[in-house]
Each structure stands twice: as structure tokens, then as C-alpha cells.
Image (cartoon, rainbow, N blue to C red; front, side):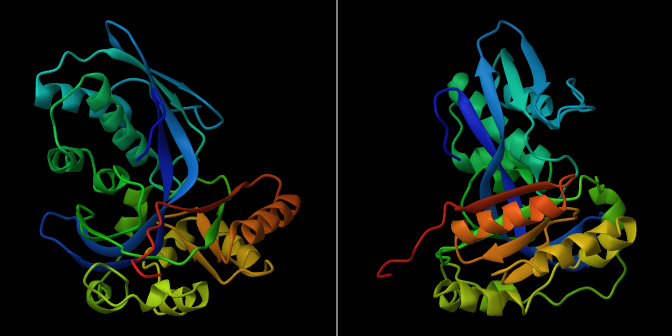
Length: 305
């Protein structure tokens, strides 16, 4: 995750697919998902202070706790405890992303905080140790430490870098309806999906790179996958069906799907220009929805391409 000075972006995390492959004895569900990041982001800024504090501003700040109920302060205190650092600094969170939206906003905020304070406090903790620490905060926090496409498995802590993806762009749409992740998972019932995508379908460092050749090919591969949380989320928030239908109807949209546990959905487009045009068209139809467009961040082309 790149930063400029004292500002750290907490990028929206999008699940291009999400398979639920089982439920563990501890109650957590095992997942298989391809994650990418957008340049739409919350922002973490750090100012010098002798005490630790959190200030929240931005279009989605209302109702968010600024105390230890917020993952940002939890991340700061966890890092201080793990490293013997004095917890200090005024943390300013600009909340640009909708809350409880299936795009990892809170997890990304926590990850950006860990990275920012590791730098500010000059903590001698390598990326592997920071990953393990991040896992104590939640399943999505470790993957949000980076901004490159990744395959996640297990309960979200096991990561495998994706070697290449074609140039493409996303339209993100949220109907301004929060959906609690726990409520969605509570709706799930077996049977669960059979794990397979890590071995066959995706251009990981050890797998074929066919999906990286073009957006059309990527779409074909994605069409063999799904989001297993979508039926449960649509039961809790039927408007998700409207969102998906509206995205699917947009010109040049190759695929419409829900991200994470919803209610944010995405449309896949060939390029940012097409995604921006679709954003403008849909915003005219749905002025009360949160709508944004972005290229995929941290995309790595394979050697020789």
C-alpha cells in the first residue's frame, strides 16, 4: 500500500469471486476468493501528538465510533502492545467509502493504520510479522496491507499473489444500505462449494495465466465462479437484485456481481473510460446511490507480456 508523506490510502477491496468451502469447528467459514483493489479509498492521516486519538470525518463518518470500538484504534493499540511502543499520534480517518458495504472499509482502515504507525513509530517489524499481527484484528485485515490482486483462502489469512491480470476497470455501486457480514454468514447452510480455483482457474505464480490474456477471457473464467454470499445477502437486502440488474444493463458491462457480503456490487469493464461513462449514466438514474469507477490497482503484468 503506497503512501505519500503522512497520508495512507485505505483502498476498497473487491471480491471478483467468493466461494464458501466449509465451516470450521470454531464457527468461522473457509473461503476461496480473488481480491483486487480500487483507487477509491478512505484516508488515514497521522499528526504528531503526545496522546493517541482518533478523529473521523468525511461523507460516511456519521455514527462511527471514535473510541476503542473502532478498528483503527484497536490496530494502533495492538501494534503498540506488540512492539513496546508508546501509543501516540492524532489519527484522522476520512471515511469516503460506505460502511458495512462488502468492500473491506474497516479492515482497510486498520491495515493503513498499522502501516502508518509502523512508519511513524519506526517499528522494527517486517511484513510477515505485521501480517500475523493484522490477522488478530480480523480476517480481511492482512490482505488489505497490500494493494495488489491476491487469492485468499482459509478464513482469509492465507494469501497467494496473482501474477497477472489484463487491463480492466470496475464500476462500484452501493444502494446506501448497510449489510452486516455476520448476518449474511448466519444465513448460510451446507452444502458448501468444493475448493478448486486455487489449483486451476487463476493466474497465480504456480498456475496457468490464461485469464490474464484479455478481459474477455477473464470474464469467461469469472463466469465459472460466483459469490456464494449473494443469495443470503439478497434475502437481507433485496435491493441488491436491483443494483445487479441496473449494472448488467449498462453498455459495455461484461459482468455484474456482488462484492464480499454486500451490498456493494461491481461491473467489470474493458477500461476506465467505459467504466466512467457507465458511472455517469447510472448516477443519472440512481442519484441516491453511491457510485464510483476505478481501474484495478497494483496490477502486475507477467514477464514477456
